[in-house]
Image (cartoon, rainbow, N blue to C red; front, side, top):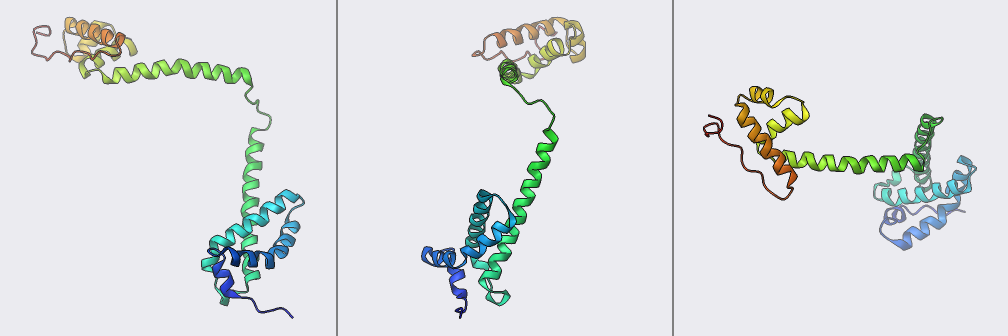
Length: 195
């Protein structure tokens, strides 16, 4: 005759290693039977059993004896864990299906990507240094070097004289050639150069 289930044992499995060991020994064969019905792979079955008991440890505080016996509760957990594993496997299968037939990267591809990343690193550093320039210097440099305007076109776009634009462009370039040096602040509109 089976002894009645100890509902207090379930509540303690998350905190008491001896309670967990007793619970595990009592129910491992039932969970193993469930797992072997769900898969033909012994490793997947062992993983399922492990995940079920780990989930049971986490959920032990929520066990309510009035809703069912410990083994019924454990089977519910096993069902949820198995369904989760099936969803994960379906996502992996779908992802593998999307890349099937596509050429994967080989060693030469990786080397080319590394070279490109290294080359872009210098560009990123230059952009960071440009961002540190005073606004007046940065605006002229961007209009001339990035947007391709002439110095006189950049001056007109900014509403400054061509001489002022040339001076700002010279200062910006000089500041970028000397990474440690701080560029001079751009001259104010009232300066003699812009007047």
